[in-house]
Image (tube, rainbow, N blue to C red):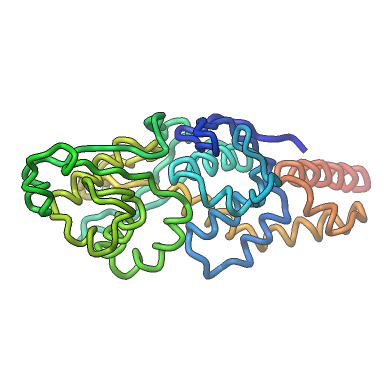
Length: 311
């Protein structure tokens, strides 16, 4: 089976501290598509892990099957933007590079349907800071003082050490985000901050809660600056009312919904190919989508040719 190779914008740091960026994946096949369709109630981060764990083979020298390295663990350990980038490459290999989406005008009195068409090549990709996996920043004196860090007099007291959010963080926090985004943001800081000032040991929840809102905001901005980014803001104006809009494009949600919506079609494809070629379900589901579609096109053309011949 042809593989997909790409370079992650962030990368995975191995046990020796080396940054690994060369990713290798297999193409999506029917088995993976069917498994995704069976996860109907799962949150997007969980579905992303399910999908990536089925296709991910290696990140640099880190290979699925290494001692203690399961596919699920590897998928969860990747940075959020790296997971999105792998979905982007999978989507291009499976469906193509064109995105066609319909949104509603954000103007409450309008709500007209707006069709948007763009290429995945237009999605900006920003590389992350390569000096990880842990990063340091200094709080401003005002933020340090508001957090009770020795009145911000010492740089060491103002120092924050953090890591970047991963797929595992996303999965754990997804149910919280759905009901309380502010609480989820605080919990993410609790998971990612590794040290505050000169305090020894990992910070407790109480330590994080003691950080002033300004301090939390500065840490979040530092994390965003260090992290890779794979994000697109859809901008334009409603053709009906002229209302301008700028909406984030949810790549993971869009692609996973595409795959889950295709579940019924997958069963029809299996039936069609099994009926005409007498192949087993197992053999058909092992094929990538593009290969199944190619055989279906050939069959359709051949059936049409035969029908034309006997008319």
